Image (cartoon, rainbow, N blue to C red; front, side, top):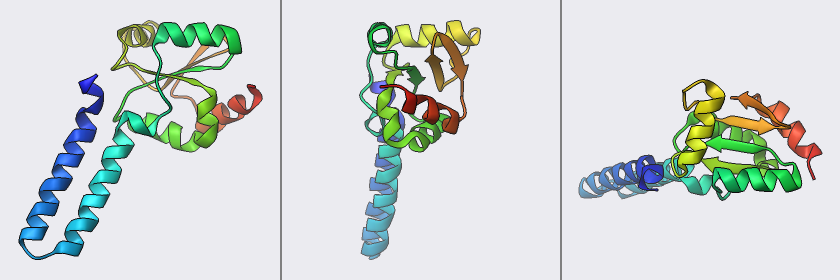
Amino acid sequence: MFRSWRLAGLALAVGVFVAVVQFAGGGRLLGLVEFAAFALLAFSWSPLAFPRSVGAAEAQRRRGHDGRPVIYWRPGCAYCQRLRLRLGRDGRRAHWVNIWADPAGAAAVRAITGGDETVPTVELDGQPHVNPDPAWLRERLRLVN
């Protein structure tokens, strides 16, 4: 669980350090701006920027009922962030599995990718797609429920 927050915590800690240094030097406004930038970066690297993750077993069970795709991701992954941002609200139509928080999810990704933990990996209609084009996935998601 803490592994998921490591990058976000690091970015926030650096932001606090930079802000303190700026405040000590009299640059209050610059310190606030830099802290805000690091806080935004920390948020984007945190699990909070993604829909609530479920375990791989629960995602598979839900997929069986509603047919929605399963998206395996991990915090700090630039490709996962790009996918999430490009999907917008449609991203909530999928079941998201954080592979750092769920060992079964990590194992599922390794099985799909031949031993690597390459994310984002999407299971859609029984077919795996490693790092799919966000526009293609967005169109698929709009067809689901």
